[in-house]
Image 1 (cartoon, rainbow, N blue to C red):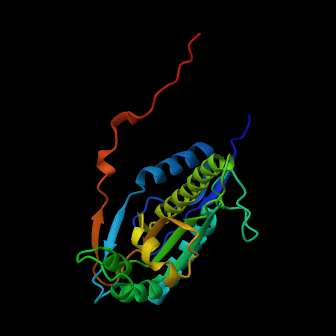
Image 2 (cartoon, helix red, strand yellow):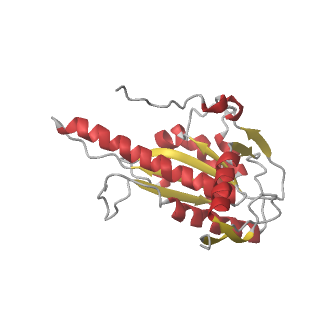
Image 3 (tube, rainbow, N blue to C red):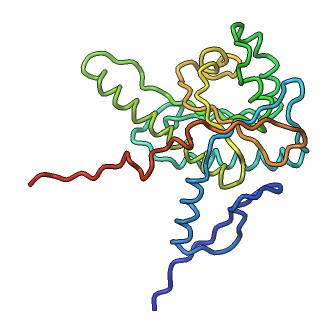
Length: 247
């Protein structure tokens, strides 16, 4: 009798999170597929905010553990597929990741009024920066400008670069979810428009995602705002259509 292939997998969780992925053992392939499916379905947007005058606090051990998990998730997210070799700085990937720990997030929150003079009252960025354990920015690198017949090809390659970067971001979100770390993918237009110089991000890069990560069991209270669209998803995958080719 053929013995099913067995994969050994460990989802390491931190703190006292009640994540369903606190498991250590062997999983058959079908069990692994179900675990991945559950992670995909459990991923959700959660904006977690704190008062900039009273930012979220963690123990040094919590921060160290959370930072290590997030940094490893960033590395693993780089296994996303990409179609074209970007060939910049000796790297093939079309994306880049920029990471701020909690200290630098809180420093940035303090500087926002000076860096964004027209920041509107009630804007959530100060609260997000004050409520997170860390912030990861994913950018992508457009192809150099070209004219003539090559311009349409450039547009197509750029779409591929953006799609590849989005795949890396989704990998990151799923890994965070599996680790029990709440997360929020923001578009970050203000970051692109006002903060690249402060963050030392080259202006030829384009921001694809600002991912705020929130470590379990903070020592101080935070506000949690759920995403608006989770319950608006089409029932029974109404967006799926079978394609039938005429005889």
